[in-house]
Length: 436
Image (cartoon, one colour):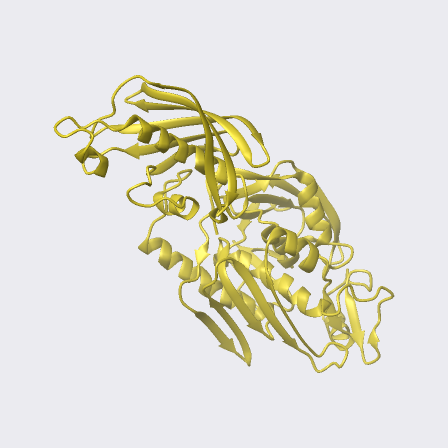
């Protein structure tokens, strides 16, 4: 899973009624810098309380049929649909101002309205790589006959099984790779649902004051009570997938793996998210990530197919999506080409300086597409190449490239190479992306 962190381009307002409180609620979605994650701001409190959507802030008290976060005595509950929309659409960084303790429920009980609002606001790359939790060995959770399992997988896949005594729900199974397009079309429209017997119980406890047949599918002994038919034959299991996608947001970073759930719900999803968050923390302690804003060699190798002795980029230190990139190449005497170029007078070949420059530009181009590891960059033209100074062992090459033009899979960039602030080479490079 290789991609940039993402946020929204524009502020937007989402208003409605809280599912359980029945109160009118106003939320304001703001873009947020890389590394922020999703943060709720309870602006109705004095002082304002910020509650990050992370496992550390999962409410430890008794919660029924929703996901609740808590910090310093302040709570925000029923956040799962909002979180599912953000995670499903790969929006990593948001600040959400809210004037109550529960977000507004979308009018139809799905999260399709939220998906459409995020799309309308615009989703943009932020020039900083995402660092997913890569599942490298099975992580399991089992309680009360409920099973949750995460196993290695190239991507993010959810497989879910539900089993209900109601003949109108029964046993349903669905397995999908979760991408923004799949989420928007196959998961987001699935509405929340409940048995009529559960509705009566929840109402007796003072909950679902904002619930109705307009924002939930209700099932009794005779079948679906709603006028609108099911949107999918297996809409019930799809909504359970929506819920667990929202709950897995609390891991704190996207999950790269296959999550398998049997008969699960929020009471089980949340402890499982805590397990995965602990796995993430352990991996980050063992292998610290790159400096903020840098693309380290691990990320570079996930994007670029080149390997020794032809990978000529060590780090990306500045990145503006589809606009500009700055990369570093450390030149050492151990470079294999120095043994023949030239014995006793080592000079980095000019063609390899251009190749290193092209690789830095290739990262900029490949990072403009989803799943860049599935593509290659072919360079189709080099113009105005000039070489001003020799590059020697011990030098650090700094490559600065800016996009001149980009159209579909073709682009042209202007590049310059520096050593100690002095230009040593420059060129204009044309390239295209092809399937790997």
